[in-house]
Image: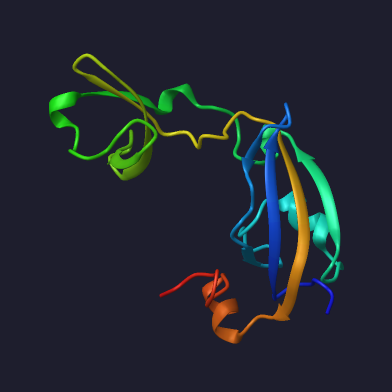
Length: 158
């Protein structure tokens, strides 16, 4: 079956930075709903249109086509006394964004009484190299289409 709108697509994806350092080995499959549902980067989706299982490609995406540019306004420092126990450097925590809604932040460093947080994705601002293999293509269920994502193994669970 060819990849087209409303197909559930299973991929093996390896990600490296511009210096060829592997950022993600792709041990777990990536599963997405094809057809403009914003489940995968648009340039990757476009490159996969019409392809079949077994198809392989290498694709480099500029930062703006992947996780976007770094936004320095997403950096925060909080007092160590306000920091939840058990979270370490490299960990994640929910903290209030500028608009007051909870947002995920990565713990960058702990220095003295301050904990430095970053609301950017760790790969924001980076050119990324994707090595992709199409593993499986199937027709999405009506429920998956209505929910705008794939369900089941390696997909979304409700």
